[in-house]
Every structure is written in structure tokens, then in C-alpha cells.
Length: 257
Image (cartoon, rainbow, N blue to C red; front, side, top):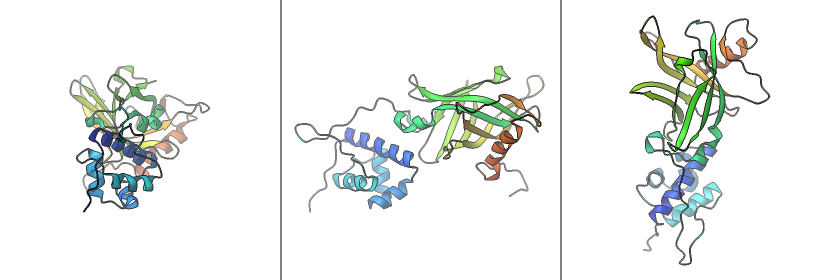
């Protein structure tokens, strides 16, 4: 019985990266790709994780399912040549490549309930961009009224959960934003977990809905505390309520289902 040849390991890793990018770009599951390519999910998972090199037969089926070439060019001996991977996030952030996440980069109007006025919306700006130093996406907040509490950190995009994590770690103290992948219109909705400053040195853990909305050049945005009566209040509060109403996040408490 003929043996299905395997491609070189370094080339297999480059192919795995390209396939993961296609899965993210097309917003399909690995299960769906395995079905379309007529291969087992286990075979696909092992190849994408690097535990087993791709075989030629698997590559042919993946090319047919995706409608693109994966085997690339060859050298004079007919051996596959891998592209050099220069921009790959660390494993603890999801091992994503820069080309796979460029669609997330940009400026976002960020909305959450105001901690000082429960009926108001707090609005500020969040920038997400590639950081060459950490080889990952990074975020930084601006346009905050409370400048002392401005946050910045790294962006984690694991393939398994289908969510995006904005992580702040300051000397072991964490703040975490968990949002959905961007919707068709670009919004990312989810939940923020942080510490609320109280009297004196008092800090209280809180979780609250959050919305990140792409800032369009032609669209006027407002930052700060947006209270009832403000021109943007109805629009901003509706966008924020959507995170819980649809729901993109659940806020649970005892006695509630």
C-alpha cells in the first residue's frame, strides 16, 4: 500500500498558519473545514497545532475545499519551500499572525456604563495596532476624563473560544475585556471586568457591559460622560444595551437564570 508522503515540518507550519488565517478570515469553524475537505477533524487539528505534518493528500483536499493553492513554489529538487514567518504572536496570546488580524486594527469608540452615574454612558477611545516589540496586537486607551486610570496592554485572539481579549497586567493586577469577534458593521461587544475606585484606597471588583465601535472618519463622536439629554445619549446607550440584550454577555446573580 503506497505511503502518503508528508511535507517538511517547517513548510507544514507555514501551511498551518495560512489555513488558520483563512479560517479566521472566512469565519468558519475547523469542523466545517474538515467536512468540506473530507478529512477527519482530528487530522486537521493535529496538523494545525503542529503535532503532525500535513500530507500531500490532505493538502490537495484542503486546496479543493478552500479554493486556493497551499503548496506554493518548489526548489530545483522539487522540495517545498516555506515562507518565513516573521510576525507571529506568542502562543499565550493565540499564535495569530499579523496578516490574519489586520482587520481588527484601528480606532474604536469605547462605551461602558459610567461608574459615577449609573444612568450615564462613559465614552473614550481605544486604539488597536500591531506592536513590533511584543509581536502582537496591543491596545491603548485615550480621551478618558480620568487620565490616571488609562489602560493599555496586549490583545489575545485564541482560535478556540472565538472571542477577543484585551488584557492589562500591571505588576500582577489584571483588567480584562472579553468581546465578540467584529460583527459585519465592525462592532465588538462583550464585558469588562476591572476594579472600581471608591473612597480613599478602596477598590471594588466590578463587571459591566462594554462596546467597541469603529470610529469612522465622517462620523462625529463624543467622549466623556454622556448623560441623558446629550445628543449622543440615545445612540450610545442603545449600542451598550445591545451587549446584554442580544446577548453578547451575561451578568449573572443568585436567584436569576
